[in-house]
Length: 358
Image (cartoon, rainbow, N blue to C red; front, side, top):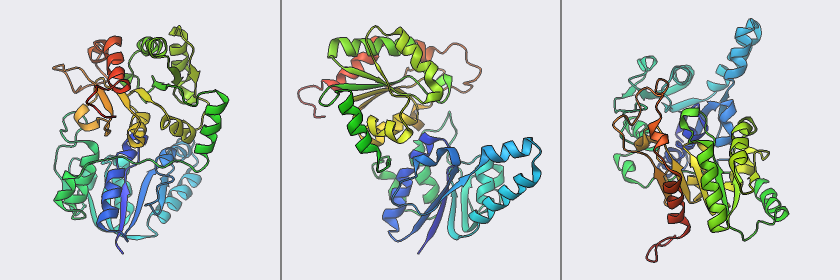
């Protein structure tokens, strides 16, 4: 039985983009063992994946806190425990999908016959396989999910034909979430109604369309389509949700009190999801929820949602994809996205053409 260790530490959306590679490996080697390494705060992305063995958690926040607080004994003990757990299995292949310093160190510490990563990461110099395809954030021309397959192909784990397969994301929720959301919908009298989710949040502000424009789209959908609007975001993003609700004329339901698995289960029940480029966008794609995705400075070729029923809105500007996101002050890529075009994209999915199936 072959044993694989995949290193993709974060973020939630990027970890979901590794699920096509997990599926391809399992189809190629049905009896294989696939373990993954992730930052502990992103473990939920794969917590219930049926094809995985161990999910090894990197306690980065705890390690940093203990180091900065001078708790060197605790830091050393925690680090040794992690490395001991990591090295408890001898792998045939250790594949670094992430290619940052942390992930390369994890791959170096792991025990593996073949280690593979990207040559742009200097710490990959001892690896047996070092890929050279363009995997940069701004200039890459292949999708991130396909890049993960490319790492496996270069390492000899998959045939070249794997790149021609249709890519699909997978997300597996908790066992208790469906029953909870059943009751959630009953309590709010939402069964059989047109429920539309709006996600004005994202991990970084440069990935967020304006809250006011999200509010305008939500109002139009509520008025013209008789839709019930649900606003999505984590408790830490409450201020953004409050901005949208404060700018809306129509009522909306704030779902931020739901747990992650409950929120994602609810996304799977929506008729439409309107969202920034974010982890919930990829969850909606994995669950088959029709979605309108608004992209700003991000490289769309690398991160477009892998879904059949999707409208991705991205402006064709000479500065895109953005080469220096932090320095950009103009944000024309978002400012030029109008409320009307987002609403029209919503209508394309809500009211398909007569010769178009949904």
